[in-house]
Image (cartoon, rainbow, N blue to C red; front, side):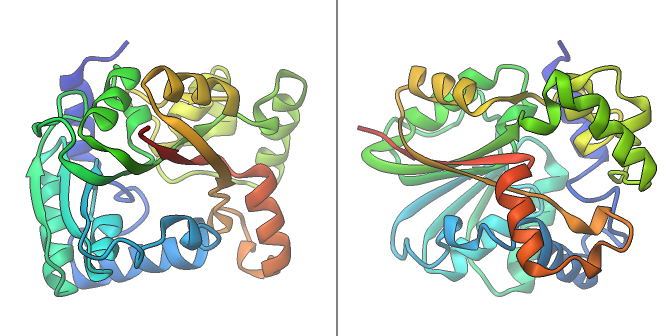
Length: 271
């Protein structure tokens, strides 16, 4: 297993979407980031995030990256604290918030040791981050600890679904090769050694940690941490990685997102 320092070094050198978007930290970078989220990868998950639902609530974004989630909650009126393991991500988040005239506190901090007291927040969110830390259950437990009793959490993770099933996985790779489907920073269908290595490379071939599990497996980890799982949704089927993907009709994209989404979005409560 990779060390925390290896994880930190990788994300310091390769912030989210840096494999895909240029001019890191510029107004055009943040504009393209917003477009990629709203018009592609999270197009059908906007209702899940409920950006305007927590005005006045204390909200923690664990692993804020370039600050898209934190910025949207801040614009929705939440009292946001955003944290990330790396200095570079914290700086990107601050730049993003300033550009959008949104207010939030941004700190460098480790998800496995969140520097807040028990029950400090009304809401805790984390978008595709906790599966990148070496001790994911500990990080999930920390999210539970800093959440108030009766509070809610929205945590999303890599999903191991039908495309990763041993019977189907070979066909998945064949189709990706046939249509030249690649993730920025990695050629998954050719270079991945197995399903777990395939998932690890979603955020780049050199990404040290990237854990995918089935819905049932994630539910067990979340319940063991003390959460009540109130629902889940599949999302994240980015058509921009598919040649001519822009011609995929919205209804088809919605079906692919809900059936073959590569991430699972959990609705959670702290009893």
